[in-house]
Image 1 (cartoon, rainbow, N blue to C red):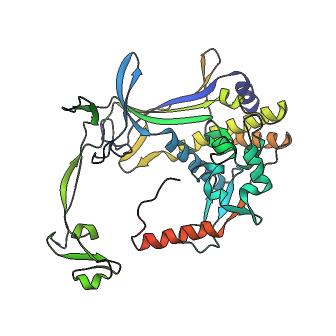
Image 2: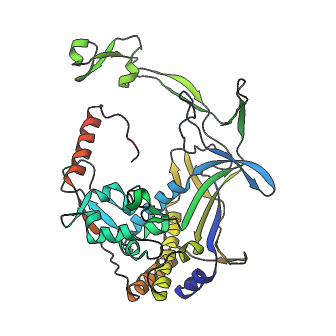
Image 3: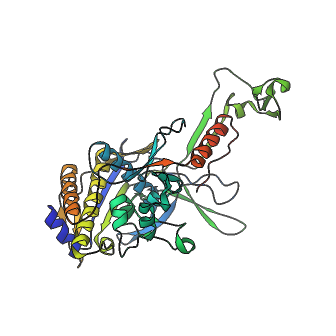
Length: 405
């Protein structure tokens, strides 16, 4: 596929898609561990996410292995590596290098949870001006699908993976852009246990797999040993633990044995499926000010999406501990025409990068102000201070759990 063919497909076709069959790297039937989510009740154990899907005329139990949101993050991570390798992708970077914070050098719009509209960027400055009050920030705040030029020039991945200026004008009615690229991995044909609540009759779905756990302490610390934990740490003497000392079990200071346990976690499946769809119909909803810029902007986003997919392919499918997958054969991308017909297209990593470089040049020629260098922001003092205090509390074990924004 070349840039002309890509532009023609965006204008007339429905999408590019691919269904890649995967197997555990340990071989078919090896146990893998999907992500876990909190149980529904207060004392319910963690669980995987199951659903019945209609596949080839049958209802089949499936498990979520990598969600659309998680896949978007992985694709953005892949693009960050491509940026480091010289791919010119506009983005925003908050520079923490001079803030004195441990372990934080910079955060980009490809890493921030809400992308270009994230609080990390909002609480930073551009040339001494609060980012969203700067000229660039004001353009981003006013961006709409009818004219998304500002986002394309500043951070096009926000258009590709979706973004919402939830704190914008009208109480959350600010700029909102649906994702154009979706990617998800599921396990197909999963053995499950259906547990019926005798009191309510409610059916709970759990995996038929089990995860065991235990730990033998090489020091042989017994749970009956008296331990006190306070502001000065822990001690076997209450007075030496400092203020607010209280008695705790040795396991609460990470000593002693952990009793053997069994949890309903881990799955086996017939196979896993990675489905990725780059919607041309979604791209056509985005406009950039003129027919020429519309075509150039959409081509840039499509090429960027193809880069994301092929860059992730090159990284493989090591998703998390004990969830390492490998391709079961190689599936080509399919061009889906408006009437549903499909046509195989061959696009590898090198082809995708070449398409993107060409699309980038065409977009610049059409009038977009694009730069390979990031838009650099500096964190406001209050942002540095909240992170500093959080780090201090974490080191003293007083911070509690992190919260979503």
